[in-house]
Image (cartoon, rainbow, N blue to C red; front, side):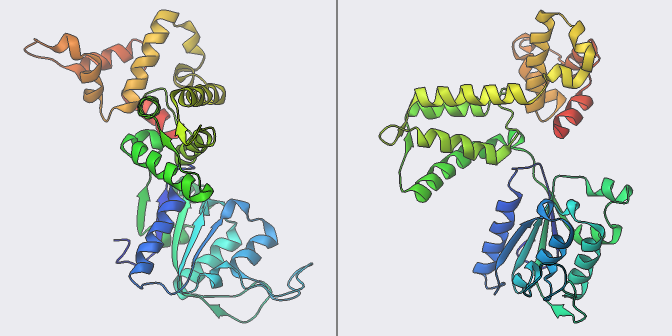
Length: 330
C-alpha cells in the first residue's frame, strides 16, 4: 500500500515507537523505485509556535513580521517532489491546520505575508501520540483535515507489545553504534542472553520504546572493554533500567486500583503484581490463564483457564478489560 499510494498516511503510536523511522523507510523504498525526486523533510509540530510555525512550514516573504529580514522558502516547498513527515500533527494551531489542508488538496498555498500562491507537490505522512478523533470532538483539530489525512492509518504498538522486535533491534543498534563511532563491539554470549532475558521479561516496561532501547545499547557499547560487552556491564545496565522505571511510574496496582491498593496484604500484592505482568504480556485472557495454570491444568479432562483467571482478578475488583485499557494508555 505505502509503495502504491501517494495519499497521506497517518501513524499513531507512543513516543519512541518508530514513527519517524517508518516514515523515512517508506520514503527510501519509494525513492529507490524512482517515485520521488525530492527530499525527505521532517519536523516535530510540537516545536512550532506563533509566527515561527507559519514561517517554518509555509515560508514567509521579507518584512512579513518583525525580524523577517529575508524571505524563507519553508518546509512544504523544501519537500516538493518528496515526502513531508509532520510528527505530532495534533499540536498544530488552527491557522496552520487550515493552510495545510489547502496545501494537501490543492498543492498550493500562500507563504506568510505574501499575496502570491506557490506550489509544492509532496506526499504527507503525519504522526501523533494523541487521539485525533478526540481532538476533533473537542474542537481542537479540524474534522476536514482529519478526514483528509485518515485515508491510510496505522498504529504502532509500544515496544513491550512487540517483543519479537527486541532482538533484531538490539543487533541493529549495535551495528549502528559501530557505524557512528567506528568502534566495533560485540556481546559476550552470556551477556547477550542476560540482556535479552530481562528486555523481554514482564519487568521491562520500555516506556521510551525504541528510543530507550537505543540509549540502553549506546551505554553498554560505550562501557565495552576491548570491544566486548560483558555480563557485568549488562547487569549494571539492567539495574539502571530498573531504577529508572521504578522512579518514573506508580506501582501497577496503584495505577489500577488507586488508594484501594493499600488495603491489599503484601502477600497478595506481590502475587497479584506478577499475575498482572503476565496478563499484560499475553494476547488474550485464555493465553494468560494457560501460562498461569499450566501445572494444575495438566491431567484435567476439562479446564477453563480464562474463567478461573477472571474470577481471581474479580476478587480484587479487577477485570481483563480494565488492565488492557490502563496498559495501552500508560
